[in-house]
Length: 351
Image 1 (tube, rainbow, N blue to C red):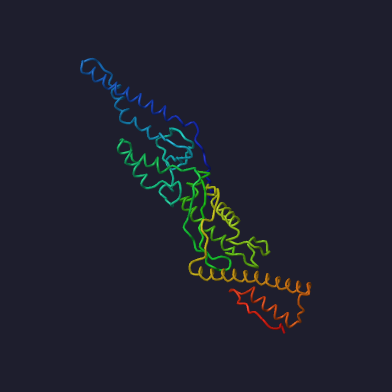
Image 2 (cartoon, rainbow, N blue to C red; image 1 turned 45 degrees about the horizontal axis):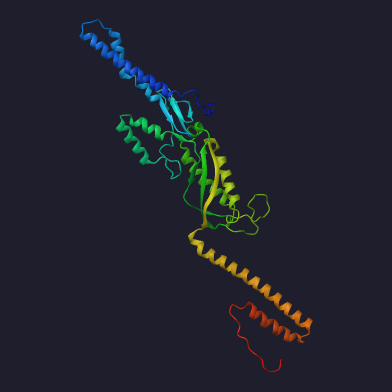
């Protein structure tokens, strides 16, 4: 049975000698050039000149540039995953001027993936880098590798497009989530998954669907959102922080094997889908009107009770049950009506 081979990150130490290697190359190049000139001068003066020195200088000038392919420059919070003939060698981390085996190649399968998120290198930047390399005489492929094959260790923000998801009641809801993330293990990120950026984007969409379908949009009776078997008042609109935290935990459980860390998650957009938005707005308006009417009626009843009690207490007028009912009806009409009442003045007897 074939055993699973899990690659763990190995940080290369003691490789910040790029400046020394570059200085030695310049020094040896000058020496080789001087050796060729001396051999040529001695040969023209019919003086004996060592042929081996001339050949050695020519060979160095032809192949001496190969170690320059092992020079790597990294800025803060950048990493470079290196492989040698398909085998993982290690990861360069930290800022500095490094020197590695010139036959090592940088590996990053997500280098050309652009998700419209922070930290992605634009195509325009790649073209400018290649143009700069061509103008200076450097290798365009090497410069492109230095730009695109690096893995950013900064905290980046992934903001996927809005999704249409059904809540626990089946109502279509549009939601968008911004996820702050960073690469924690470079070896897992490039070797455990095919493309860690696309993998993260897919897991974000899946986690949002899995969490949103548990909650109603608004607070609803007899809905269990925590899974404890008891109804609660959780909702997408009222429990934004709790929903975002559950989305973060859901994503983290899926991307841990890819060497990614989810720093935070926030809901950036939440609304009913357009096909039911108008109906839900009318529903909310009707609920608001009912609540307002209920408050008005409660206040009116209290005021009528207070008026009758004060009339009885002060003995201002004696009213029988029929007159009390008429008075209550008139007061409720005046207090609960949408328009101002038109008073009618009775100039005759009360009875």
